[in-house]
Image (cartoon, rainbow, N blue to C red):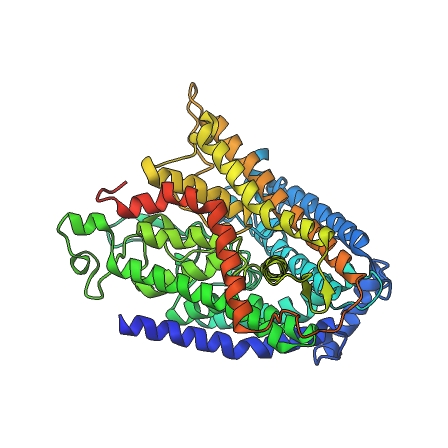
Length: 586
């Protein structure tokens, strides 16, 4: 167990060491300072502006910024839908000895909505459903653009916070292009090379038929995997090229590739916090938010690892030691890869659910009740503990403003943040932004367990079945994409039952959940940025509550937990907590 804690400490040390390096670089990208890559990519950037008739000096207020973002996202949605519905005419569409066909309209609707919202929830197996062209031009491209949109919105909100006059939040098209060219693309190249060096495949070969030792035949899927895995992790997307995701050796080949992928998942979200401190002119502000996130992140790791190392109550009640079940290392290895073990499975599960990354290297459904409660609790905090690229920090900034408001009430002063007073309009927008995602998640989860069509997708019974359904809609509402595997959108056709209706319910309601929970908070965040942009800065006085102290960090942590507890705690009690206290296997 000591070795497991050592691995966790090494991972956290590397993360903290790289955070200011990447954060400083990103701050230069968005503040107009010269970066080395401009010598190579500058002509490409200027060419793109000319092609799309973009005047980067044309600042946009929050409404124009939001309109540009919506138009771009709609275009990307339609383009991907067209790609996925025309698979029979794609190049490289016959590498299984048969032509790949398109999925049904409702599955395609869900898939496109999933990738355009940075969720990557999947009701399909990539290697048996999608052509190489769909994987490259559909999934991989959307992984870039959805991540870039999230970061662009964050940068716009930061500009609203630091603006001293006027209403401009920058130019969406410039932020989008610079994010892709100077941040996501170079990092993806580096990670792709590292993954290929470890054995993650990258080719356009036909699927290979091999003969097993038992005398049977097995088809090994191949494809341009490493390049998609790199951006799916860096962009906190998470969709697997293969159905078994990062538990599959072709996606995640060695302990080093596992380390690189986990680091890629959380590196940009962590660095964005440091970037924030640089852009607002106070690194202490960035480190304060980083500390609040780190406290919640490390607590989740500790609980998840301890729970999985200990095993389930049902295992102990049956008189079977965890050591006998899972080998000399002890712990619950049900649903986990032996090569990853308990520690890397628990660390991965916690990392992907504090960020909006849905990739998995173990089955969350097989976690203990308490270990499985950690991913659900992380989603309950609206994934603001580092969170998705861009979305995590702008979500946390909403909680920062809420904490400032509550702190101001406690000390009897008008709440201020970085010299700007938080008025009635701002706090209304903040409240809506903080509650939008939980309300959407709870409403759709309730519909899934209360309706016959929704229950058709629930595989297990009892608290486990409830946890599966709750987690599915919390994951989709938080644009995460991971799942308790029992909840499905694929049911074998059987005339006379609700199977087909269950499929359509899960696909359509899930797609609408992802779209609304992505874009409603974005619009509210941009509105907050627009409201703050026009405010004058008031010099700090002796009674001003500082937001870069340990006291404020504690207040911020309390607000995040409080909002999560008030919204999701009763539902969590009905699922994983009940299961963890039970002596029976559900």
